[in-house]
Image (cartoon, rainbow, N blue to C red; front, side, top):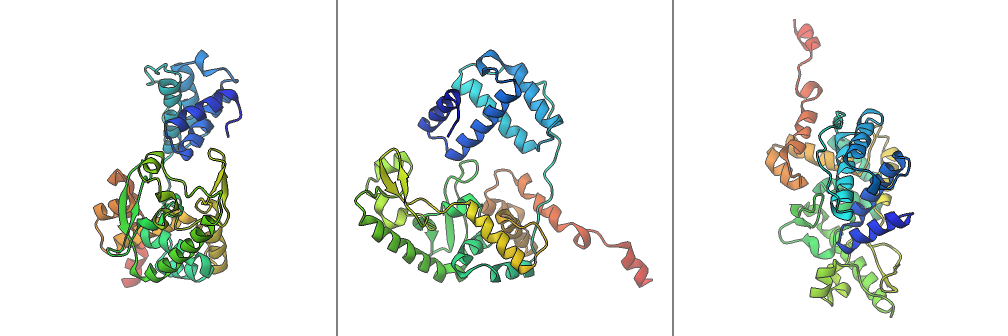
Length: 324
């Protein structure tokens, strides 16, 4: 929740216009940082010059990555152009971040196998989907029962990063576990319906109006639901949300430690490994781009750089000495 009347008004403005909670939180964070950096002056008393100074500060003093500076810029453009209705003009005189994204950490196939063996049985499907389908962590926890296409062995990903939709592969080996997971969801739903205060699963407003009965249908339930019901302040009723995404990384880090993997392993490491292993197996870059949901193929090309590291791309001169 925003902690000042001004930030609270921005939050309400965004929620009414159906911005995602993640975007709301990100924008509020950078708007607050901007205000604090400018000695808590009200944004209405400032403009493009102060915004440029703040963006330069992020690049020069905080040395943030290009993507981070871009998010901060988007937040402040929203603040002035949309909320305050005072469009920023110019915006040409700030220092651009030059810190490039590092090459991703990738597990080899043996390490992935070791990791999965160390994941508790109750969580193995979660981790297997991250690697087997190249999902982002938030995409995983937001999966609904209806998003699993057993006939074509694929997953439907709705409103992924950049509000894009896509299809990604589903390993046939996971089908039995998915059926078992759906049975668990069905049991949760059966119990929830006994509660007179249960309002059904959360759905986007437009879909909720179009399909009023869908909130309590099995197909719309989250595939990985929270173990507890949550109070919905808008309806004063209860809903079952998806599991907390932060718990996914905890599961993976514990398993990596148990497996003795020395690399920094997170949920995104498995997505990186999915992409790299697809390319190693001969998949073309465009196919991998579609599977990952990248809007620009240049984003996907970073995995070709991973493949070219070390012996994959450069022959060591030591090898020539040993052969002479």
